[in-house]
Image 1 (cartoon, rainbow, N blue to C red):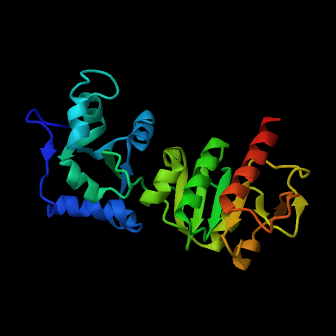
Image 2: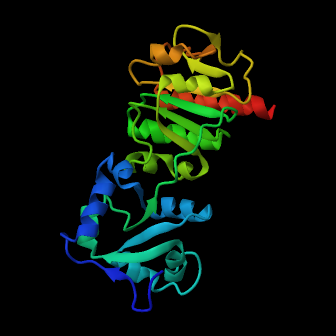
Image 3: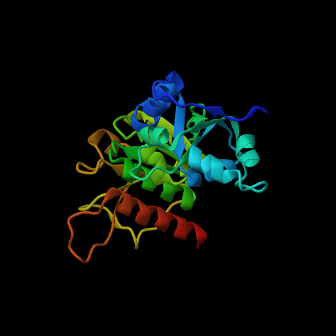
Length: 269
């Protein structure tokens, strides 16, 4: 908690804690090395708070912290953020900009400990990511998974780090409602006890005509190469998305949104 003496103020760019925060905010692999994640911006911070999450630190640009001083009570008050974080750190605005990975820094963020790695649930509705490398695509797929009722995401080796800053921003808070497994091997798909579905541009049933099982596991592959042969060996069914416009293929996040929605719609029906 913030002590009676107020928040911790850091004014030196060479402060060791600040150096670690800068790495966490800017390097994709830093989250795993530090077992922490950087949630930049009030949207991600509020998403964590809405699920009862706690942070190691709440970090504010000085201008943002001063603005909070105008709010005595309520969810945007200093006390409200102090209850979420073990400590509050305030940085001069120019120093906060050296931390931020955004062109327009959000002026606040939270440092959170990564959750313990969960056990794979064989029965859970699952999204499998096979070497999906673009962080924006990965975050968008996580957001769709959470929106459409999938509770588990299995990221195979070669997939963008799920807790990297760019994936977190694209996920828009979806991380906090999902069980996330990283560094999985293709053979781990054999542990899933639900039908495993994969997309293809040239084979399989038409998605809009096929019966959608629930629960199931959707497998989405590399942006250029698609689902790899080792992973394909574990897939039970292949699906195609009708494309009357004639494009060769869809962006993987777009395809995932269509497929996951189809499963959610079938479940609702």
